[in-house]
Length: 111
Image 1 (tube, rainbow, N blue to C red):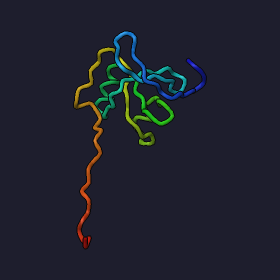
Image 2: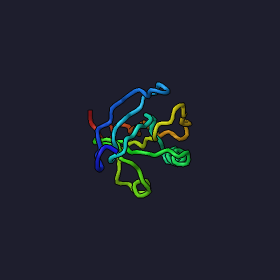
Image 3: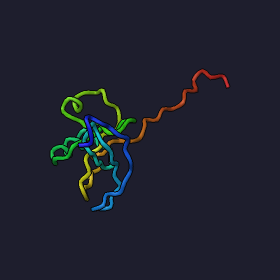
């Protein structure tokens, strides 16, 4: 433990054992190392069932997701799972990162 509830900004690093790129930082006093793949709800459930912790990435750093934070909607940001070497996230468990596109409105414009 690094201190009472200290959260630090995340830094990219290379995991020494498997060579994967991960984000590392302190999340509320806990050292956290997470994968870069954002998860959807099914992905988070699969990660939790596999015994991995999940975190929300915010501007200030990582926030540990407990039962109240998982059920709530107050935290905005991608959900990331604790790093596990050589773990592949299936495509149906990845969060979509594309923003919905809208068509420009041209009705009623005289030019």
